[in-house]
Structure formats: C-alpha cells, structure tokens
Amino acid sequence: MLRLIPLAVVLLLLAPIAAGTASILLAALGWAPEFDAKTIGLDMFAAVFKAPGIWHSVWLSYWVGLIAAAVSLGIVILFIAAFIDTRGFRLISAAIKPVLAVPHAAAAFGLLFLIAPSGFLVRLVSPDLTGFVRPPDWLIVNDPGGYAMLGGLVIKEIPFLFFVTMAALPQTEARRAEIAGALGYGRVWGWLISVFPAIYKQIRLPVFAVIAFATSTIDVALVLGPVNPPPLAVRVLQWMNDPDVNLRLTAAAGALVQLGVTLATLASWFALENLVTLIARMAAMRGWRGKKDHITALLAGASITLSVGLVLAGIALLFIWSFTGMWRFPHLLPDSWTTASWSAQGANIFETGSRAFVIALAAASLSLVLVLASLENEYRGDIKISDLTWWMIYIPLLVPQIAFIGGLSFLFLRLGLDGTLWAVVLVHMVFVYPYVYLTLADPWNAFDTRILAVARTLGKNVNNVFWTIRLPMLLRPVLAAFALGFAVSIAQYLPTLLIGAGRQPTITTEALALAAGGNRRLIGIYALIQTLMPFVIFALASLIPRFVWRERRALQAGGRG
Image (cartoon, rainbow, N blue to C red; front, side, top):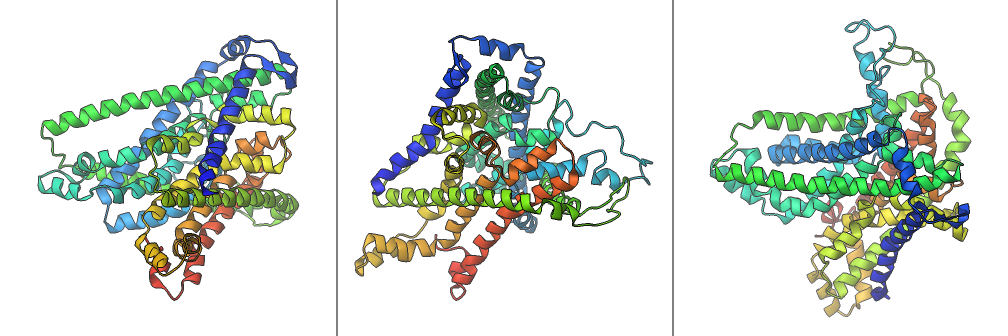
C-alpha cells in the first residue's frame, strides 16, 4: 500500500493546480459553460488591461513582493550572522516561536491597531508630545504606495525564514565562520561568505514561496494595502465576486496576469541573486575583511526585535479591543471595559470557530497521515528525494492561489461540489501537506535507524517497529508538524471563500469580512480567536510529549535524531 502513496501525493499536489489552472485559462479565453460563455478569444485580457489603474495594481504586487522577500531575508541572515550562539540570539529565538503561529491576517490587524492615526503608538505620545487631541489626518494605513502592506508582510515572513534557515544550519559546515574569523574577517562578513552560500541553496525554495505569497497576498492587502486601486490579486478577487458574468471572466484573465507578475518577480530575484553573488565575489577577491560590522549587527538586532515586538504588541491590542467599551482618543487605555461584544457574537463565534476547527483538524490530520506514509515509504524503499520532488512539494506554495483557486471554483461549480465542507478540506490539504512534510522530514530522516535494526533482529516486523518505536520516539516533531499544518489551515482565506462559495464561513473569513466595516471591537474578537486556535494546538503539541515522556528526559527534550 505504501507504494501507492507517491501517486496519491502527486494527485493531491498537482491535480488541483493543473485542473484549476486549465479551468481558469479556458475561462480567460471566454469558454465557461456554467456562465453560458462559449466564445474563444482574448477579449477578457483586453478588458483587464483597460481597467482603470491596472498598471498601478501590477506595480504594487511586483515591488512589494520583491522588497518584502529581500528585506525579510536580509534581516534574518544578518541577525543570525551577527548574534548566533549568543544569549540575545537565544532570547529572540524563544520570542519568535509564538509569532510563527500567528496568522497573517491577525498580524495585519494587530499592526493596524498599532500604526493607524488613532492607533496605540500615536496615543502613546499624545497629547503631551504631539498636541493631538484628535487623530491626525495621516494616510498611514492603506497608503497608495503600499508601505503599510510591505511592513505587515515583512514582520510575518521574518519568523518563517528564520526557522527554515535554522533548520538548514545543522546541515552546513558552521565551523567555516570560525576559520574566517581566524583569518581576520569580521563576524558578519565572515559568516556571509563562508556559511551563507551553502544555507541559501537549502532555503532557496522557501524564499521563492515568500515571493509568490507576497506578490499575490489578499488577506494582508485587504487589511493594510491600498484601496483605490488595490493590488492586483485583490482586484481579481473583486471581479470574481461580482455578479456580472463578464467581470468573472475578466477575473480569470486577471488571475493569469497575476501569475505572470509572480513569474516576473521571480525572474527579477534570479537577476538579483546573480548581482549579489558578483558583488560578494569581487569583495572577497579584493580581500575585504568587513571588520567594522557593529552598525550592521545593531541594525539587524534592532530590526528583528522590532518585528517580533510589533506582532506581540498587536496581539495584545487585539485582546484589549475585544473587551473595550468606550476608548476615546487620545486616551492610552480604554475608558471602560465590557464583554458585550463577546456576548453578542457568541453564537457566530462558536459556529465559525467550530467549522474552522473541524476543517483544520481534518486537513492537518489527513496531511500528517500522508506525510508519515510518504516518509516511511522513502525509508523502506531507500528512496532519496530528488530536486524534482522538492519542486513538486513546493509547487502549491510557488503558484499564486488566485491563479488556480478561482479555476477550481469554476470546476467545482460544474461538478456540483462547490460549497461543500469536504471540498474545502481537500483544497486546504494542498497547502497544508507541504508545510507538514517540510517540518517533519528533517527529524524523521535524522532518526538513528540503528535502533530500528536492533528491534528487527529481536523479532519485530517492520510495521511493529514503526508503530511501537519510531513513531512514539518522534512524537514531539510529529505533533509539531501537525500543529503547523493546523495553523496553516486556520489561516487560509481565499480557498475557504471561493471553494466554500460563501457557505462555509470560518473565523478567518469573518475577520476579513469585518475589515471593511472598521468595527475594532469585532475585529479584535475574531482576529484574537483566529490567533488563539493555532496557539492552543502548538501549546498542546509542546506539552503532550512532556506528559507522555515525563519519566524519560531525552524524549521530553525533543525525541531522537
């Protein structure tokens, strides 16, 4: 049965993307029988490029995606280079872990409550330092340049890139940095030229995933991004939700334009890679030692500390706003506290929260089963993962969601599957499986298989060894992978909205639906619940191994391998 797992994984990851992309391509060309459109042509593409402000939308998606990836990666790499193996590094590592569980939308709402003209930061210095007795007329959030959206993306991509970099670090020769230091190189520059090239080869695909997400983000753009015109992906979503059939077909063409924007951004990143490599090589050949790196280290440390602090402070503000009665500007704290908003929303919170929990539980559980079967099949068949396989696993993260989810919604509408709970679960699995696999693969492959060989010589069969030895000993990484998959599912907005056809609302879709209304109390409630759900699962994933292995210290610390 395990031999069928690779086929199942290929079907899970590639079939929806291929079917969705083919469906969206046909709709973009004018063929969509469900909308009584059967004329092939390029009229829909012409309609996209005739839309007012379309080139500004394209430019927003392009530059924000490129800069968000560059800034996030730069901060992470410079911080690791400057502070690895220091006390400050361990403190930031501990603080950044809970940030990884925070959904993008919740982090964006938290940042909104911080930096808005009536937000906490302005209240903090008003009226004593600013003289403001009412919110200033500043266009900070939803600014036309997209800078607030860029900031929201950076503070959320930093934790992801930090953890994938730390996962790659043990597989490199970190001692090269010590050799570079002995040769007179500065701490940061020596690490960059001796260790980073090997690390970047391993984290290149995750960086591409960050670029793909940032160029096509919808949830962060709805909260922090420009409004008129919005980024391209938001415009495509608006067209998809329009009752006018022609605009829905225009949305299909727009989705393919979005795919082209993402590919153009990736091409620009390739060029940037070559430019940075050339500059670094020239600097190394000229003997530049980079000893004066104190300012660089200080900026990197301050940047990553600020990003983590902004997310955590934003979550605290979500909590405060959810219990706020009256909170007049410029008062630093609410004038009154109340649970009225919680009481009024109780029934809807339970309904949307329980539905989100069921979807995430199903998607994460089924994905974990598939991942475990895939890894065990690789072990038993002595299969080494090829570069092509890695690309296949990353494809759902590299293709913009809007480029194929819309096509899947057209296809599911034709098949009568749109709006069903299990259709939403299936599409969530397309995105959950890669994260679960990438989280679990390294600890699984690092497991000391000599233990399994000893068990086999004592008479245990291969299945018995899996269930009674390997799986229990890897309980902590298995639960951690499940928790991450659960968090990824909770955060899914576009698949839930389009595949659910509005009939499967979750806590995430409700939170973003409230963004347009501007009711901070309700936004605080739903965004806080969206954050707490994965946080609780992460906490359980950390505590369960401590309870199960309370008499085995090594297994409490993180399992074998």
